[in-house]
Image (cartoon, rainbow, N blue to C red; front, side):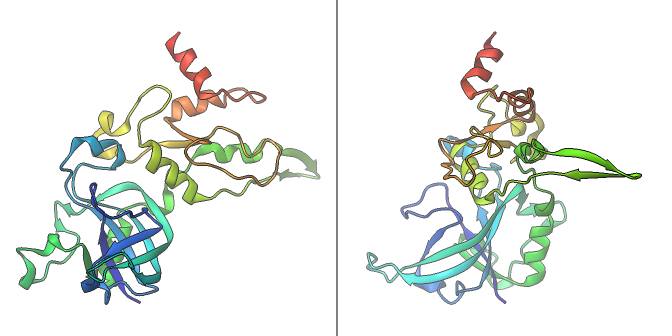
Length: 259
């Protein structure tokens, strides 16, 4: 299996879709073949206008994925390609490219001057695992809307044991990631931003709230991450769900905060 770093710039001439498609020059086609495991990377922030769309203003890694179909860009005069990205997962926190112990990537002695200019950088499995291990991917701060999954739970006693029966509602993690990509990391209720308050420790942390709780009937439904999901700090998120039979709208929450 092959492993590669792919760079996503804040400003790009290509119509890439994070976690879905990636445009690259033909010189990198040997590194981005179907099945290749990739890690997304952003360089140092150059324009503060993009601060809310990034996990950190420093150079960092922010997600993983896998290369799917690779096709030529028919509109390119240079023979560029497009790669499909599948199984994308956004990190719950930024992984800085350089720690106190040094860079996470091993820079070849022949590329010390221009290594970071490469938009696609092949790495070995040890480097891949080292970067992913810094992300706490397995303990990501998923939305606590999952608590709604037990809203129809009930308990009953059988002998000396306690039996709990609950209904769980399936959720698409990619929708959560897309909602964060659209709305950023600042609470849409009170305006709190964890990075601004806690620095790098708080960077990339936020809850995602479904404006139409999945636990309220209707079964399977189409969810628009821009219109049907909002980002909230844990305090605001707890408040919108505080009463069992009523979920506050974002407008109602803001009204309470203003008062």
